[in-house]
Image (cartoon, rainbow over all chains, first blue to last red; front, side):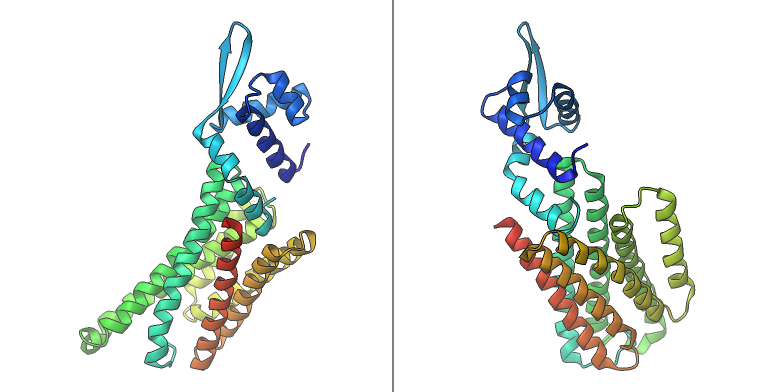
Length: 89
Length: 216
């Protein structure tokens, strides 16, 4: 189980991977340095929170960022700084 | 506030202070809620409710300050009896809202997950404030007690992450604690009220500087 801080970093890594065009699960998995099982869990959470969307096509699943996901990347420094300052991490 | 024998000059300044406190706490609550919407973490939701509760507490105090300054001087002075329930209700509402904010912070810093504990804290803190005629003292003593726990939490947080931002938050809560302890004595001596408000101002300046560093 990752700490809250590490988990914020992992989410950031996944979203950044998708942003630079690594939209397939295997590519995201290598880029974010996660096991298949953990990636599945994170992707489910990110879809649930509306940060990414999942598309099914004949070649498999593909993911893309939502505006909220882009917002997370943009505000990442504020998120981690705020959470550290107020002991929420 | 109505019990304090303080100068009219400071009352004017006090209105500006209260406005600044309301804006600062609202800003922290707003940023926290924005981060909650992005991350979905429940502790951020609680934290934002805590600070929005502080903001509404200060807003009530602001309204009371403005009414006391502009209305009581002219219209209500002759009808003081009608003004007393309004002052009492505003003061009590301020105390309750501020206490709710502190309870949420204590609950969050204790990492308690049970809603029963939150209910227990709410009851133990709010009931004495509502039913005690000397509630202004009770309020500041209970608030100081809760702030001690919060300061301890932020001291530990500072030890864990030694940087200017965590130091500013720790300082802010230390100043809030000292200001609340000062307010305990303010009903008898107006100077303590001025000192308490000045310390509170320093606390919120620390929070504002921290926000500036975070958004830079």
